[in-house]
Image 1 (cartoon, rainbow, N blue to C red):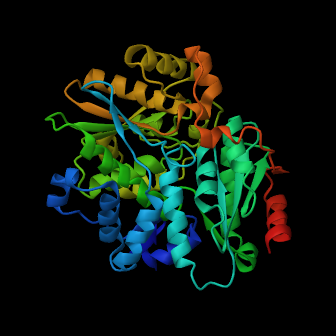
Image 2 (cartoon, rainbow, N blue to C red; image 1 turned 45 degrees about the horizontal axis):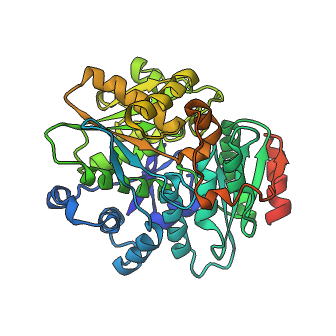
Length: 434
């Protein structure tokens, strides 16, 4: 398997290099040279395969002979050890629950797979690997859980102060051991900018072995393709075309869906569902991409004003706006509409959905008004208890908190406060890690 940068398709690196570097030196993003078409018999008979078997088929076709199949099977088995069930609300509305992993968020799939893959590639290395990751909420918790106590790897998580929920913050700041948290006085975009600058800084790269666990890392993106296939296999056989409605922030989830489609999964259409940070829906309408500072919302994991994976989306469509807008529709909703969506799903279907999933529901609802012959799958990206204050306020009822999250409530937060200043961040890294 070879990969190129979205800014330079003439130079290639191998998978190990791409995984450990995270970001190419030209500030592009790594993409596979070739996205394979999976065998038609495999797609037609998905019901016969377990989730792990689906994941192994995808990775073995994509990676080629980079990793022996026996080792790849161990990586998949250790990473994908929780389900991704589809709950059907009615014949047109389905929920793909992606919150059954250790941190109760969809990012467990990518974080755990990446941890296993990096641990495999890290064998024999003498110098410790440092993972830098920016989070708007769920990424940090998933990465912390995925890499916790992984030998030879330490993790530094940057998160925006006051812009993640209390329990999300506890997931980032209470583990200790090889997990360190930096509370940044700014936005997610500020955190992400600090991480990107660190990767491009020659002194830091000389002193530290750096890699990323954001969706900018190809090792996070690949396992996100798995659950699109897993969702499709659980749907009742139907002549209705299938669309996926994806709550979107940094757009890694949607990019993974587009890759799954290119591998042969018969997805009819994708819906990019956002909150007020609607840069991509606006692009799909106008053809003009205008990134801007993010604004805070009650669906904070989507508070991204300059989504990194948009570069990969452009790459998949050869920067052709007309083609992209034919395959992807964009919708955006404000906080008031989001709260109404949470209430509507509960009142109509007796299902508790959190704020990000509610945005996905609203987008699918609007899309189906114009395409009533289709059916949709909404990606529910986190457990409602992770946004318990908003959900309980809207529904006026108590939400049960799973034990693995509830135990964090009384643990003491440990984080270092930083200004969104690269010089300060660089000094912290050199003083604490080198």
